[in-house]
Image 1: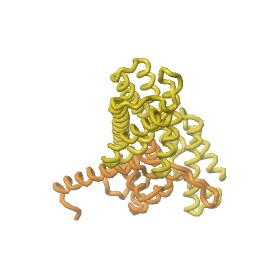
Image 2: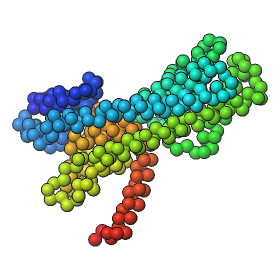
Image 3: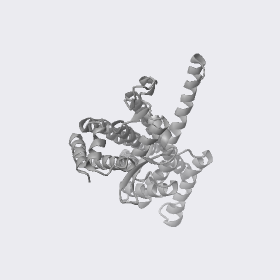
Image 4: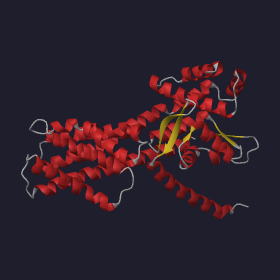
Length: 252
Length: 118
């Protein structure tokens, strides 16, 4: 690497106070790639030409200040919106169980696991697979939320129940699919299909519960609550993102 | 200030203030781009009138990424060097579409007073 470029980047790096080491490395790596792109486009090959190019740039301390300025707010936005959206899902599902007559501690445990582990956890990590195509995104989301929902398995009176993890996976599926507009018929069909799947698994294959018709509306309404809470959480998150965007615009 | 107008520029700075995020979303609608490519595209399309500086570009891109309107990824070039590309996301497209409608309404409204472009 050019000595002038190395010195310039070192100065920018020293100005990136308050950022994590990993974030600093990413910002400097990106800036280096940018400056090398520019040098290549301008046919710069010598050390003096590179120095001349860098002298046209913003002062390293000013550039570092600009780069670091919104980093904390961005991190807060990411964490805050993930938590808030997750809480919506947790409150809705935990609240539904409580209204259905489940003990408060089971409802609380389910809501907390569903909200914090599955909901917030999903929003926290989803940026890592945003680049994938829609089907790959959905598959990854289902797998990740299946893992994140392990605490859900313990929210019963009977030790660990693996089928509980499917509620987390269903939430992940809905979160990913409803990140884009969905046709109404698909939206309506989703809780119905999942309800049928759960009965097939629990009553038909595993024989863990006895199928009774009166249980169908309870299960269906719970799955519909998951769907509604996911839609509200996504809408809420989008509103916060738009608000953040408009704040950014105002700041120029 | 996201843009640095040249002295001969006749566009009011205030009109441009804060337009960087929307401009970036519009550009990324055309496909994934990397930082230097964005700066060059803006420069070429404005006939060199406006220069987007690194200190304005990257914070704006990172903010858009935090809102998940765009996503980034690293790609290794044939010469072994890496570039960080930014690509618009469905949420960004939906938001841009809404903002474009707002923008067109605003332009129509202003034109009703000041008249269409001469």
